[in-house]
Image (cartoon, one colour):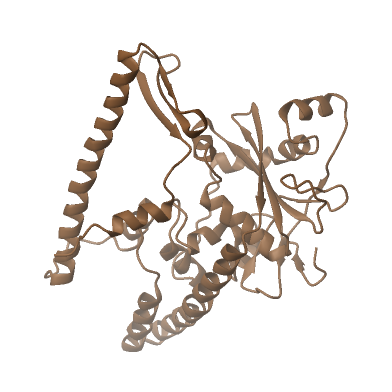
Amino acid sequence: MKKELQLIPIPYDTEEWHKFRLDGIGASEMATVLYMNEWNTAARLYHEKIGSIPQQREDKEIMFHGRNQEDYIAHLWQYWDGTIEGMMDNYKAEKIVRRCRRINGYLVNPDYPWIFASLDRAINIEGGVNMKTGQALLTEAPLELKTLSGFSARKWEERVPMYYYIQVHTQMLVIDSDYAEIAMLQDGNRFMVEYIERDNDLCNRIIDISKSFWEERVVPGKKAVLMRDNYDKKGLYVESEQNQEIIDRLEPEPDSTQAYKEFMAETYLKERQTLKGDKISYEICRQDEMLKCIVNTLNKRRDYCKNSLIKVVRDNNVEEIDFDTKGKFTWSERANSKIRVALINIKDKPLDADVEKEVGKIDLKY
């Protein structure tokens, strides 16, 4: 690990810990800044960082259990040789094949002082291997430890969810590593490890977008909040309102997440008032109606596709259509239920960028 890295040892969930988190962007917050987190929104994060709303400090039960199982997951990981069978054999023989270490505190890279990272563990250089290439590690690498439910694990079947992909890339960026792993325990009885190699294009995007978010929104936003509060104390309400306008103008753009809706409801809840509608707002309403019709039409089309496949399966008295290496279609009975479920699992799935491109072809303007 780079000698220039700054290690800031702060006990978890203390006032000092919460205060430190206001002075930068953490690896677990980076997906929010990049508009890639379905559980949080950039607007809320911005207001938390500038101090205009309180930080979210709720410690959910799932997070509590996750932290307490990290030691066990890290212990299992030390026996991991790439296979479940090998891990169990190594565990029984008490043969540790890999090692990691705990880093107690936040890490800050002087090249990106607005970013910080807290690693669950760091994979040791000595004996450390890139499990994709088989080559020895040249630097320590982040090891992220996760507990998953069966429902959450389904999101990992095709690829690492973007939220975690961005998180470990931020960690790699901070410690200047080109490799990371995520070790997961699903439902307490299934162990998995994902290997992630550094994507420099994504790292550059993280740097550019987070720097802009911090320097062009948070820094002037903090100043505006301080000025607004000082003017309020002095009874200078015109000047206070001017700074509030700056705060509002710097707020990140809306997104499509439920988290944004909840944030708006919490922050701007007030008695019902009426605003005279303008052309822009009306066009957005019309666009929403159009999208609702499109979604309904697409859902009907999807039902037609699945029903057509079910007919093929039924007519041939089988439960599955196999497309060899391209995937399969399955129509089977759900466990402990009489409900029949149609599952399409093909390898040639459209990329997010391709979907966005196709949606962009639809003219939603009026």
